[in-house]
Length: 171
Image 1 (cartoon, rainbow, N blue to C red):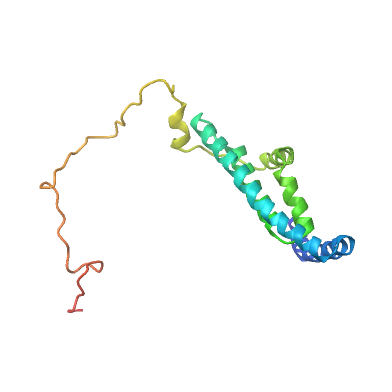
Image 2: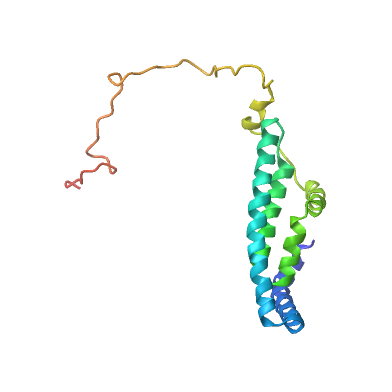
């Protein structure tokens, strides 16, 4: 999609939504049209909750297996966009939102987006789980451990600190 088309789409979308309201309102009546708008908002919230929890589980599973959950993150973002589109009043945005809730449509969008996304590296959080899950975890060996008692380390309040409870009168 060319970036020069985005302002035109943003300008024309509300006009198309109003035309959709007029057409649907003439066909089924005012109260049924308003009922459909409210129903789509409730449906969007429910679908976000149901599918959002599933996406979070798949992201967690993918990262525990040592992979980078790029596909799952994009699917999660598309579900959030879909729920937002369903919450907006309008039938065209509802149709787009419902389409994004379909996993096959999200897979097609992922195929389109995956060619444009480059993963430069992975964080240590993804790398640490690549070891054998049956092996006992090893403690980190980054340096010496210093064990201090209360008597070894004590911080006295600084009266001159701007964060102290006492106000400074000398300033």
